[in-house]
Length: 120
Image 1 (cartoon, rainbow, N blue to C red):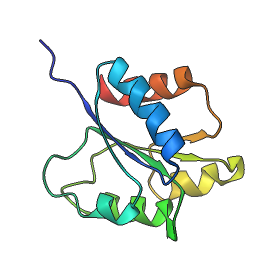
Image 2 (cartoon, rainbow, N blue to C red):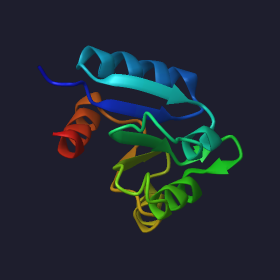
Image 3 (cartoon, rainbow, N blue to C red):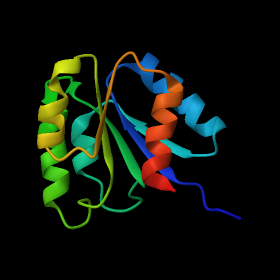
Image 4 (cartoon, rainbow, N blue to C red):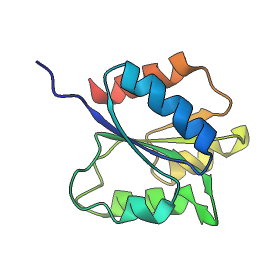
């Protein structure tokens, strides 16, 4: 019996969070979500196996959050897939330490394939 992988979604668009949450739970993942980037930085226990991080969140830049996560021993090994409606910031997402990047709107299969790459 496999323990379900934990995925955390950080995105301030509730519609996107809901859609991704439903899909991932259907696929057998355990999902948590937040609309607040600061919550991601407060993680101490119950760390996710993967983080889906939106680049633009209510006043916070996901790239800054990603950089901070990658500097902390406790969170530096969590794969981060950054998502953004802006395709031209992939390079800056990767530069901030993101492990992968997905431009919105995306196909759910593309998202699942990227998640599987980091969680299997």
